[in-house]
Length: 441
Image 1 (cartoon, rainbow, N blue to C red):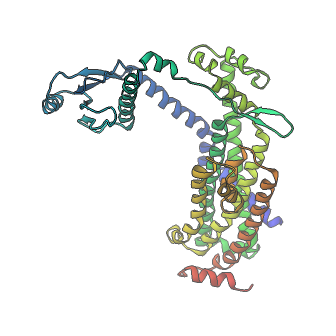
Image 2: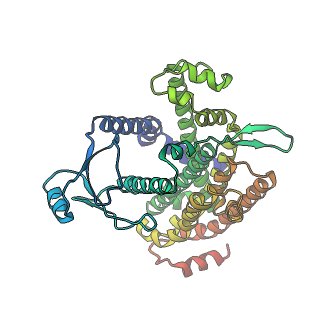
Image 3: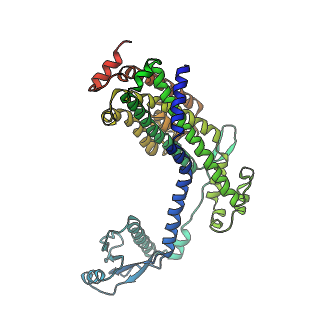
């Protein structure tokens, strides 16, 4: 055990002392918000300074009238002939020509939008919805219902989401907040397993080719060396996450302090909104959905989520890290490792796809449950479900399953590692790996 600790310490210190690690760890929490802020700033500036796009409209039906828009200037074409309108349009720098043919209200068709370059999906959607809305209004008026009545019938409401426990306790909830937590934590585990798993494989290949490992094996068992590498690099990942958490928290507190919020956890939502300057926040302070979202964020069990994240990160990393180490021990170069990477990476990719498609959409479904229980997908899948709240027995089953999973993969990988780490120049395939696995000590 002491020898394993020595390897853990060595792998950890080698990486955390690198300038690249320090720069990545410190700059990432600063760089990402800066980039996003710059993108948003320039997007807003461009939107504010952009000229309205001119849209020509040839309405042969005489029924559709587009009003002014913040994005478009509408110019109605007086030409009777469509071909003449198209030729005239080509001589301009206008964005599009919308052709509205004579149509039957019961079966409207034949609408065309011409452009000199591909138009965006949002623009096409704008005009589709615009024409549909006008036709719906015409149908209602034809039925004897005027436009004022139609406008009065349209209603917008806000539904407040509240979780009701068996004890009768009510707690505000937000699908958007829980979706965000599930996606971000699941994506982080997905990303970290790939990044640090590749580091394990690369480290094993380098030591194998430099023959350093032959010296190490004379004083330490292959299993201890493999475990030391996996745990040491896992510790590097946790260190980086901890530093990111501290820096991001500090940045958030600095921003809140800038807006005059000294202790947000002790303030009601309305008090918070009152302390924020009016610029850009007046609408938010009157929006019940945003207020509910902020209230939900204060009620999130951050301690439980952090504990769960650390458990599934370590468990998932032990499970996959051992396999990455086994692949590294079997080959002499990263290019040779590609054939063995597919079976390892496919479950990770499937788990992430399942997170996006099934789990966050319906965390209580049968497929979500099984994704969060199967060890090869549970590290990512369970993080998508935890934020929504799950029965304790499902979490316990998932954790026990993951423990059993990484114990099995470590045992499996170690049997390949102990043989492959000492062999050079061997043409390795799955048959050879199976032979190494079945070899007796």
